[in-house]
Amino acid sequence: MDLTRAATPGFFAAMAVEHAYLRRQAAHRAPTAGDYERRDTLTSLTMGTASVLAPFVAERLLGPLTPGRGRFGKALVAGAVGAVVATTVADRVRRRARRRGRPEAPTDAGAPAVEPHDRVAVVADRTARIGGAAAVAAGGVALGLYWNDRTRPDALWAHRRLPDLGRGPLALALAVLGWDFVYYWNHRWMHTSRQAWAYHVVHHSSEHYNLSTALRQPVAGPVTVVVPYGLMALLGLRPEVIEAARGINLVYQYWIHTETIRRLGRAEAVWNTPSHHRVHHGSNPRYLDRNHGSILILWDRWFGTFAEEDDAEPVVYGLTDNLDSFDPVVVASRAYVSMLRDVAAAPDWRTRLAYVLRGPGWADRHRAVPVPARAAA
Image 1: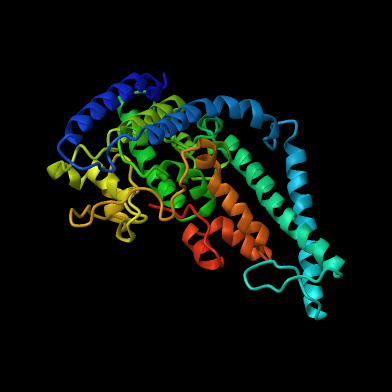
Image 2: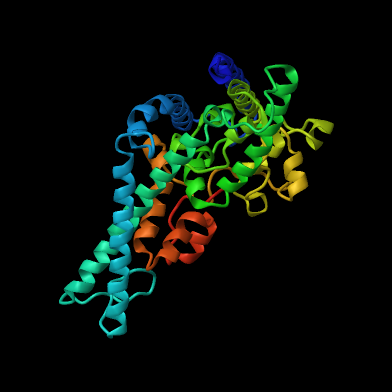
């Protein structure tokens, strides 16, 4: 049984209780970022519903495109390779045009404009722009689908290196601990690599912070490359035990998305708490890219990414450049659109890949005009 679905009635009950409490408090104080705002809450609920339905839709729509399994997988890979070749040739044409002293099409900040009569350079520029974005999009989808298909727990279970650990409490405890450890590194990766941030940014896009924020989840998991949780299957943990660990992890994270609970004393030293996770959702410079843990905050303390919530500097939620939209489609897609625009404007493959693999902060510094949706870690 999927624990997150079983816990859904409890999620909504807790939201109702929190909402009622905050409404009573609002009569005696100014509005806060923890209050429920109708449009923001509806967006979070819509994204939460979409994230539940996404796996079923993805299997039908993306399954046929999965390399090595789907009937259109080879065509997707061939299309990506063809786009890479066309873009590489176009890059060379542009470089030759520059060496011959002819004006080149604008490919990045500061590049000169193309002359109308320079048709070769114009065609090469358009080819490089369209081909570069197409290659990254098609190649990224192909790689993500292939990676996630081949690293599923049930796919790796047959290749396990250690004996079957069964379904007992010890196996479940190891799976929960293992999931939490892998989650920390994946979560940290999502804040330091733009392709992963484009997936994760959905969860950070709200400027409010209450239990509804926990339900604002992304939908592009099938095409996102992260460290696979299926690796635990190689160590003898059954796929169903790993899935149970996933549910426990997600259910735990729900209650820490609140301003209603302030500090929890000694528990703050070991466990991830609302205070620690408020820091994670802050756009304040001192809070960026901190507190990536899920259940345990120990990983952040041990690996140098921990920050304490400072009452003297209240957390400002959202992104460093907010979306200013409650449209779920915009919330889900804007970071990908921004990334592909940068790729299209890049002058070479080194810069294109940097726009995809390096952090969102690097992209903001590199481009001439910043594009919204910088990470608010």
